[in-house]
Image (cartoon, rainbow, N blue to C red; front, side, top):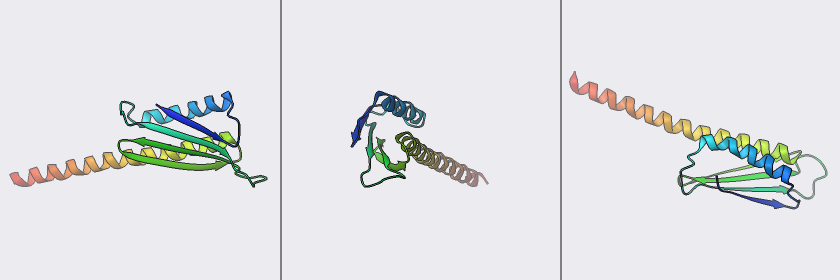
Length: 120
């Protein structure tokens, strides 16, 4: 999956980058990798003005099949923020996939009822 990573207000380490790539690979089973318009933009940043709490932020923008899914998550550490963003993105992708399957099943049931009605 083509991914663009941007680090704001901190230096990206190879460990953090590999951790991010590992988490993003879990999203690949929920999207169509043959889509030519597939694009993933990730921004990791450290918020200023905070002494403690959710000072790390992870934003993931995933463009595929003509739609853009955007997720923003905060965390105590950069890893926690990445995990929260990945979980939210997984939830949104599964929800949209379930909606598509549900719509197809409902339309099939309606068509089947319509064909039965013609025979009775």
